[in-house]
Image 1 (cartoon, rainbow, N blue to C red):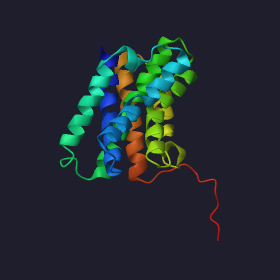
Image 2: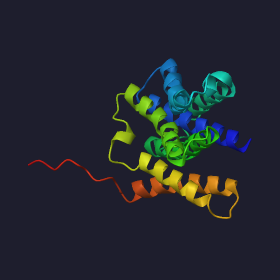
Image 3: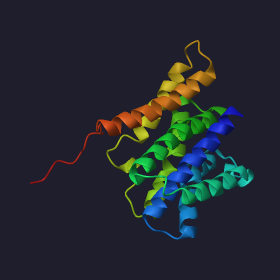
Image 4: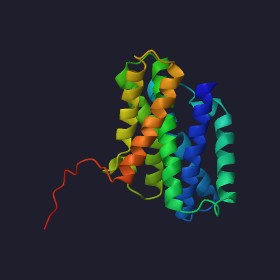
Length: 203
């Protein structure tokens, strides 16, 4: 039940981030729903396909679709209250990657994959819904820019497996790793910490 709740919370966070991007692009209602949908389930769908889970999660459990529809309606109704659009989008996107990274890692553990593959799955789960969202909205995906995004997922995943070696409750390690991912992303943006740029400035 705990992991299911985390999954649903991640779905809500990413669905709302999709709505905010779609409305910023002035898409119609159908476009808003599609962007919210692919943002929320795109990474999880790719993850399930990679590990052979069929049908994928949102097709076998209608709760995901219901959650996305509810999130879309909520975001549209309260769009005027969601001030500072960019800041709100960043917040929900950051929460989403923290939650979904750990959901993906847990799926990998359930599939008896080695830790590095679990971290790989977690990063895919957290990142690729946003990749699809940005591509459909004609934006360069954040993961392909120099911002700390996928790196935060990887570091959070590594920290989770290190925390599991300590005499702590597994749930505590899980929640701590989520916060580590979120904090790394927040600090990276706040202090403008980026990955090295391989391109030299041309005069």
